[in-house]
Length: 273
Image 1 (cartoon, rainbow, N blue to C red):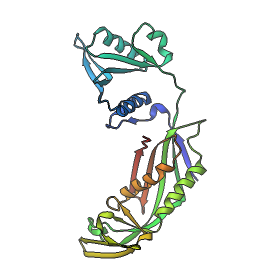
Image 2 (cartoon, one colour):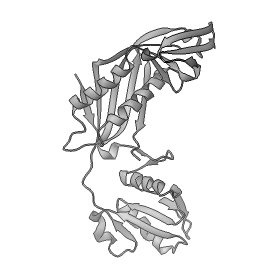
Image 3 (spheres, helix red, strand yellow):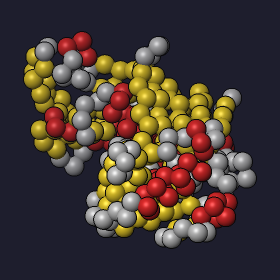
Image 4 (spheres, one colour):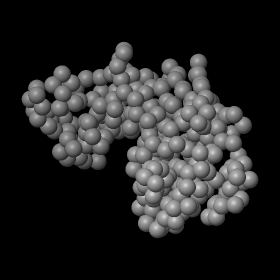
């Protein structure tokens, strides 16, 4: 049976393209906007006031500072910064719920959004299993042709609508279709491709067990960018899933179990640029 769980937006973690862990969805939106405009920025920039006090401004850009007003502490900080007459411009972005406390201040941009809830669901099903063969020439024990049966669990994260992230039936069909693409395939790093014809790949490499030279059918072979590890297979599944996901899905995670009590988990944020 598929199972699911939900987390509040306040529990979700937002990471920009620089790897900065941000405190809110608004901060991530500002970071993405600055990146889109090719504007360099520093996040959580430290400013030293005349009295020696250090305060952190959310963003420093070449044009000025940007502060996100989320609470009364941010209002106090903004007032302190305004009194400093900083050399660079200072703009604040705040929610209308704080408008009464902000109306006497300059350079305030108010925004209004619906309360957004971010959800996370986990989906696993017996049909999410696939059989495959692979070779890992860089690992002695796995440097010969061998196979596995692996099971998959998928995690989807995104903005919920009417308390629903995505219909389980719809998600299950998408995942199952992707698993079928990989089922009963031979996985190998494409760097070991020596030559090919219309129907076959010729795979050749020197491994710990000696020289391998294999001719394999194209229709049962899957060439990878990198070694055929479960970590890389997780990434490959994500690549196949993302284009099929509804637009409200913001991140996809894939767990692959290689036998019992071992496997890999990769989660990736979706970029829709």
